[in-house]
Length: 170
Image 1 (cartoon, one colour):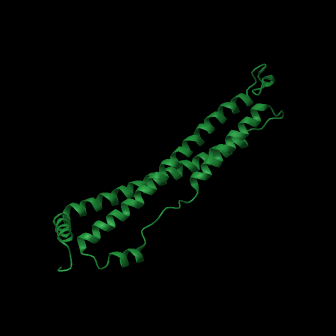
Image 2 (cartoon, one colour):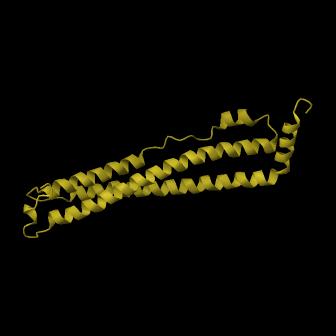
């Protein structure tokens, strides 16, 4: 301890004094990571439903005459399915590396190691949350396209007089 500055000694004492608080914060980070995993799983399930629904909708577009509504429906449902597939792509975020974490924190005092490890997990969680927000927006756009595709499918399959002559492109 002779080689440490006064500030380092005070910081070490502060960290040791707040041992219970640091342990509680670490537990909270673990709970937030578990919540993130549950939300990620739910997002994956919804993306699978989007892909399946959009695929079924495209397959239901059976008609002898191919109107503009048919092409619009197929395009929107295919785009919705593609967005669902994008959400289903494996995430590329970091994971806690057991070997490097052990090496990095092994010689540190217990409370300091717990605190540093907590900050490491928190930085991974922040990146994962950012990714989840983007994936959620992509999924929302996919379901919006699916809803519009269902609307155009209804128009395509309906027998409203004069509708088949209407050209949405002018």
